[in-house]
Image (cartoon, rainbow, N blue to C red):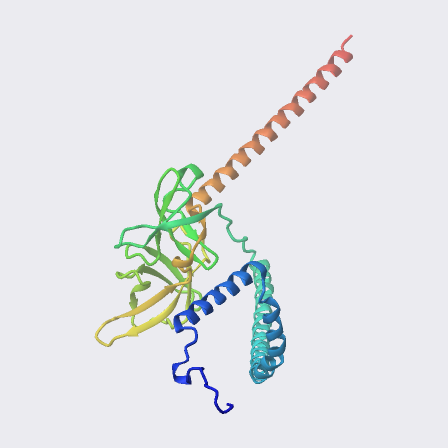
Length: 327
């Protein structure tokens, strides 16, 4: 500053610029303007694109260890899954091959025995498909309702089966629906045949509805866990040979002369959706006998009519010859 002149500018302590409120208002207005402009005219899109382009290599570089770890873990998981799937496929293939060989052997043996013993073929019973609608609301019984009734030809006592085995028996028939009492019901009973020993027994549902049991079976009876029980066909209701249950527990007590044998039905009632309603065996046999008798009567009547026709023709020829020979 030249000598003799007076500095009229205020010292820094007394200098005043825009106030903080003014700066805040200006910055807010600028931010609002930028937001509106970006929303309406996409003003910041080039800036975003430029930042994204510049930061992309850095992002890829930061993600490289993560991608490498995931790729390595995926390779290990894929190799383990492939080896497990291969092992499972090989085991299933071996089981299927063994089962196929046993089935073929049993079929050939069955055909030979039927030819040797001149056994008649298995009895075919009329059947009707049905669908399980719901389980009966009675908490003290094990019953299900199916969508077939008297209108479709269902009768009381008809056996009900599915693809696994015997499910139960029709106990109540309505016009368009029927109630099926399951084998695990405490009031259900069915005659059985042990496929291993060929001995006949009778099973009844347990009181708690959890399965079946063989009652009044001698303590020294030949029954083991895993034995498969099928229908014997002696009751005239169930056709013989239908799978019913397997033995799951055998208990022999020294203070009792009877063994406690528990069975588990092969047909899972909780998973049953579509079933097959069979005509009772005695009715099917009676209908077959009636049909055979009707066919025999028809054949006899046809034969008698044919014989009468032949005799009439012979009498007519004899009469013609006699009239020609007369003078």
